[in-house]
Length: 161
Ligand SMILES: [Fe+2]
View: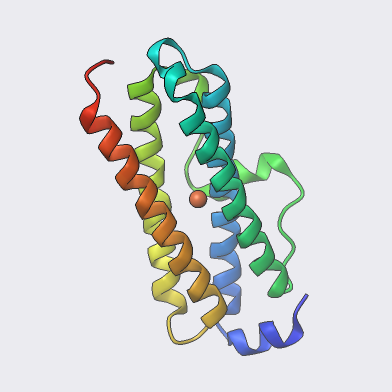
């Protein structure tokens, strides 16, 4: 917990906390999606299993950073996994429905873009006020934009379904 962290984050801190909770749910939902896909992907997608596993690890790392910021702002990340989906704003990701390479990537692109929008909103709403959250939002926005680009590139080169 950080008393000064919270104090200097300013009066909009409750808004930051709510948005960080959503980000936490989204990162962990994305983690689970990629993890499940990496373990169960079918057909030629098995050749890309490692790509999905790497994405899973990356999302877990993002969740860790978001949790750390929440705690700095004296907010506890939820201890209830069923809350992740509810908080995420992404709906049910249902990875078992997307186990071919193309469908797994297309679904990922869909929720990555939602997450990108969310970090962009978080950056806009904390800019010039809550510097710590702003900095984190930019860092994670950048990481998610890179993911979007990578997934788009793979999809573009894909000749199979
Ligand atoms: Fe992420």
